[in-house]
Image 1 (tube, helix red, strand yellow):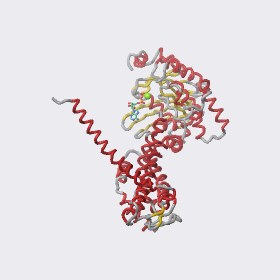
Image 2 (cartoon, helix red, strand yellow; image 1 turned 30 degrees about the horizontal axis):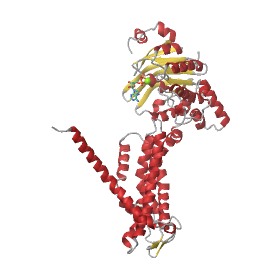
Image 3 (tube, protein in one colour; image 1 turned 90 degrees about the horizontal axis):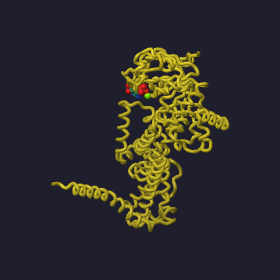
Image 4 (tube, chains in turn yellow, red; image 1 turned 120 degrees about the horizontal axis):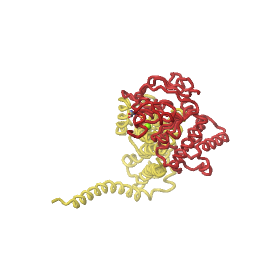
Length: 282
Length: 251
Ligand SMILES: Nc1ncnc2c1ncn2[C@@H]1O[C@H](COP(=O)(O)OP(=O)(O)O)[C@@H](O)[C@H]1O
Ligand SMILES: [Mg+2]
């Protein structure tokens, strides 16, 4: 006879083990990076330019470069993504075209980031002649995070109850005003969450910026959006593999700053989502 | 009496299903019309045809006309948004916005470009008074509308509809989710409101229809079977089936 209690116990243990298998490596990575990187963190490391062939000094240009790129990506991707999401959720009819668009968006989010990098190189750097620049890099990152922004924004818009739309229309309010004054405000937390997750992704990726903006070594701040820039993920790659004899402390310190940036953004996204769930009453 | 709303050989379809068949009726100014009939007979569909809320339903279409003050609301050039402003609606389930009590009522005004704060405040107070809610909420206008009871929320929704000064008020079973006390309040309110508005109210409750409406329309399977002065419909209906329905033999 099979013992149902024992079966349940085994199943439970397996599930627990699977969870552990996910949590432990993530935890280990974070812990290792914190322990090895923390000693490098000081004011000079954060605010100085790299010196002595990146073997000493700080990572300030890379931090600033990443912030510029992330900001540029969002300036480009948020309006377009949001408009697309509004179209998909509020205006498009349920038909074949709509389904194809949705499928395309889902597939886009699965495209490897290096492919975006090549695409950005061909389109922005070469075809539009932006050269390797913050502009080209931002646009490339923006395109990469568009699917995330569209998908999460659409979900946020669609989670606003239809009854709100109905009432608003019945009060003699136009469809666009209804979207603007009722649907969007109630979807903002979800949209913000998606945007921040997209930002986190944009901040952490190396491949899309590799051919489009990243400077190997540029110990100054970029002067315009047509300038190249250093960026944290690429800088990390460079000092880890391309430059010999970089102190481990500096490498892990750079990794820690990057990790902190990304985790911080994800944390903000989680907090917004949590607050929103708690307040929501319908 | 003046005709406010007139339906003329109106048919309505959800894709291939015919939900309203050849509806012709006149609704007079300052009267309450009660619409009764078994569920699924097309009461809501008819109501939503009057303020064109069915426009948003995919695959819906109509034949025939509905007129307000002699003007065809299905006219090609008509301003649908304007029609909806003239014909207000209160839904079955109370549905305040996730805003304050004040902002719920002020919403329609603000959106329509009214900036004058004291005018808005005045209008909000007036609407809440007309909806018999003012005394209960005047000290907490900035509190969330969700803090109100079910009956209060429904009266808030009525106030919100009144604030944009409609000429006609459509109510789709506005009291069906409320307890008897709250229902009574809404009924009294409807009685008050008819001096200013034409009211069309769908109700499941025979006694309610008898109590509050001047005219009663009996719908069945998409057809308007009986439409007359309420006392006549309830005492001497012209059709056997109306009598059977009213006396609760089916439905
Ligand atoms: N959005 C819709 N799509 C398709 N059929 C609908 C829709 N709404 C209502 N119907 C159908 O139309 C008929 C009338 O519905 P309704 O007007 O809601 O009836 P009532 O309000 O009298 O209960 C019903 O058979 C119902 O199933
Ligand atoms: Mg109904």
